[in-house]
Amino acid sequence: MFRLVAQRLLALVPLLFIVSVMAFSFTSLLPSDPVDLILGDTGTQEQHEMLRERMGLNEPVVVRYFQWLGKAVQGDLGTSFFNSVSVTDAVLLRLPVTLSLTAISALIAIVVGVAAGVAAALRPRSWIDRLATVGATFGQAVPNFWFGLILVAVFAVNLRWFPATGFTPISTSPWDWLRSVTLPSIALGLSSSAAIARQVRSAMVGVLQQDYIRAARAQGLSSRRVILRHALTNAMVPVVAVLSFQITVLLGGALIVEQVFAINGLGTLAIAAVRQQDIPMLQGLVLVMVGLVVLVQLATDLLYGLLNPKARPT
Picture 1 (cartoon, one colour):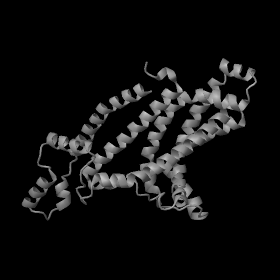
Picture 2: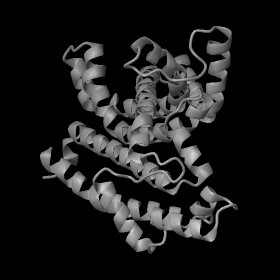
Picture 3: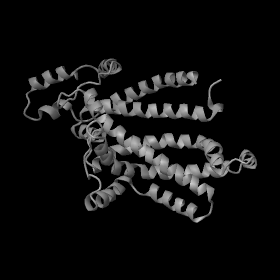
Picture 4: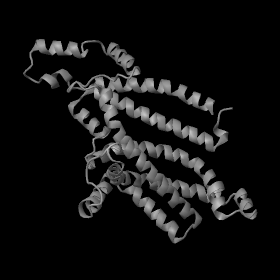
């Protein structure tokens, strides 16, 4: 397992380097000049030149990239062009919010998806199977932001069980934190649970027909032990790949759902940076988001290696 981790970590170095080059290059090609956006039409030529020099924009792109990369490796992602806020501090301030939504929605997706998939596989062509299939189709077809609006209208406005907007840090009140992330997490986890349920059902149907499952039942093992210990464990091997992709989708979807529930996470920060064309903020956000996706991929690779010994390096 140590060798698998070492191989995956070494493979991340060129990937992150390529991503950093692309993120810096694309944002540098924006048509608007940040100096013009900051000073407007009232700034003099001397003020433009002084600000450009202070922001380091008078240097060649290659020089600016390596200067930025050298600081990024040390944890300094630069400073916002518009409010002089450290990009690292701004991202770290909003990151727990987005991670909270992603983690709770992933938990909901896994629990609901695995439960629905197993129930459908144990009763193929029954009403449970048909209901799970219809539910999975509905879940994948409905946009998460639309479902979020429905949840707000029903459970926040009418029933007043949950807050409609805002986010409460877990350090302030765990109960209020849970209430604030429930509705957006459900809205996020719906489509992912549908995809997981489909994959779990397909894998479970195939595993339940294997000879070792029949042998386990012939030995007198209980149905619960056969399903949980033998069938589900082996069926989860192909599901891990789908799970990795769905967590990545949840991370991206959280940026949109945050707008529906007025939550100040990375999504709000990214949209503000795009509107203002805040290049350092955009570069830092892209690098952080890619880093999170890479960590998710690494974790799922390790989980896949634990479930499937054949995938481990020899």
